[in-house]
Length: 156
Image (cartoon, rainbow, N blue to C red):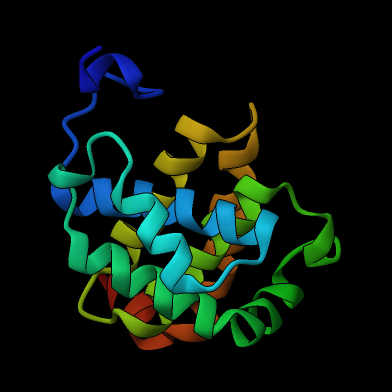
């Protein structure tokens, strides 16, 4: 089976960074369900089909960072969501953790890229309208985490 046939959206041109986010999502999903240490999650993800095409250092950074900061990230997300974090679907929960981590820690990545990537991940792996929810939550969060970038973008 080819890599294209195993992806939820095979027509997308997926960069190594996008693939890293896909594997980061899979790792966080595994962590949310099994509560395994980040090192175990990463070891498992490294054996997944197609991992060699991903930015492996970024996968590691995303997983270690989002897991290590998960309590803080959930606290930041809670005011922007309409239910307790524990009631989110595991995919939406994982995507929101990834998105919140990138918005908070990867300031060199434009916020629009972070949100778009999160939306695309949710479209590929989440429920029917989950991407709309993720978009709204991260859009509210970015105003708190990157107000200067949002204001500068609004002036354009």
